[in-house]
Length: 266
Image (tube, rainbow, N blue to C red):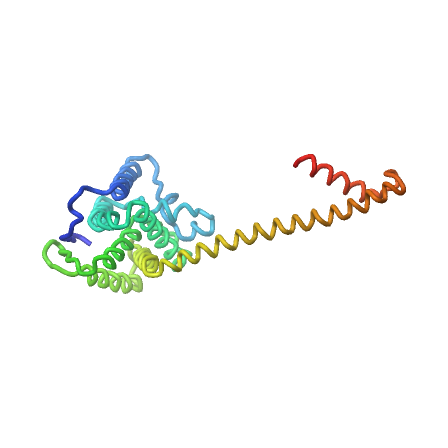
């Protein structure tokens, strides 16, 4: 990804707040992890097998703030600044941050699904960055970028080339330290989020409706239980009027005690 240059309005107006915050947080974490006495990559990096087998689920979030070296973080942050700034100005800070995090987490989950037994830590913001690239290509498909500051290409063709390249590299039998599946996952999640946003919303409504329905059913069951209990209480009170309290069974006395406790709590 070295040397991409884009001629667009994003160079003016300064760095928007979320992009600036992400740049600062990534750089700070980078220096803290390298200056610290203990390596945190095994804990905060994404180790697919540990993430699901030991429920270290925070890793799908924290891994995107760790980087493996100076050039790794430099290129990721450069691309974030170059392409993310215009997106944040167009969408607003809240929506851009949500998209960035969804792409990053989605890329991590994608990698876990495809490599569930892997014990190799995955680090870096590349999954989220590739999602940002897809978003930029969808928003501004005909914008020119200059690869290595020399070769002009429309951003839509650049992203298609990257997607094809990442796919074939992920299928390669040779071992690599690059998380190609995470890159593909970030691109796929970003594309689906933007092209099928209604699906995400409908899924959210389905989840909300499901839990809301569970609450309603629980309240109805409690009301039905209370109604039946009060019917029994009426029968017990009639019995008391006829034969006296001392002739009640243990079960009937227990019901009266439970009702009395419930009423005292209300």
